[in-house]
Image (cartoon, rainbow, N blue to C red; front, side):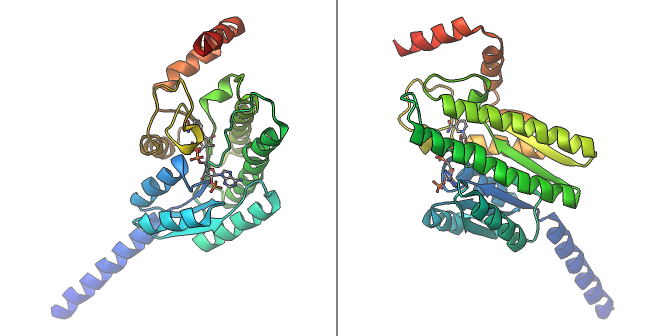
Length: 268
Ligand SMILES: NC(=O)c1ccc[n+]([C@@H]2O[C@H](COP(=O)([O-])OP(=O)(O)OC[C@H]3O[C@@H](n4cnc5c(N)ncnc54)[C@H](OP(=O)(O)O)[C@@H]3O)[C@@H](O)[C@H]2O)c1
């Protein structure tokens, strides 16, 4: 009798551990040493994901890793060095033991109203070249494995060019259109690969610190939770926070002259 109970307990423990092992999905967050990316590492780890995360500042990554409740892997990576970054992403996928979700969050958002080429070049290198280099690798991986979820962090500014940040808003329009293309690519192949385009409004992070005229500013934690929810729901598009859908609607319909007038009025 005792032997049978012992056998039953062992079987139950084995079943429980194999269910747990199956459920530990793997997510990679690119650009996670501060702001939204950092908050995302916490939300995913808290929800029992095995998290891999990257950025240039190794010491920040190490500090965040210590705070996470579950196993994680960090990798120092500069996405603007595309060949090296792609190699490091491949390594990270291997070290993680596979990949279910990738969140391409790294971004630069300096104002370039002086049309300073160096700043614009850096934004393009991160927001466009780095983004494309890693998104393409991840998508090919998902196609090969016949499943996956690619998430890109675009911006509400993707919907309208901004006078003080034309390169940033232009780069985010690229991100959103590129994601649309990848979504159609997956649909053509009839594979369960999801592509989510996240368009945040203002989020209180180092990127927008000191910026004037901000409104409806979310905390990084609120933004990360809403992004997590959109990923769980496999949404194609999400505004963060949700009320920015209203601004998006306005940005899509107002004529150029009214848009320019509002910005000029806000400045005066
Ligand atoms: N905050 C907002 O209001 C807002 C609104 C709309 C969209 N977004 C988008 O949200 C994303 C996250 O931004 P955030 O607001 O959280 O700003 P943030 O705190 O400045 O975070 C930016 C992240 O990108 C990483 N990064 C920058 N350049 C990189 C490079 N060359 N290689 C690798 N990683 C790099 C940074 O890490 P290292 O510096 O350590 O490399 C950092 O982890 C960005 O794509 C941004 O455009 C933000």
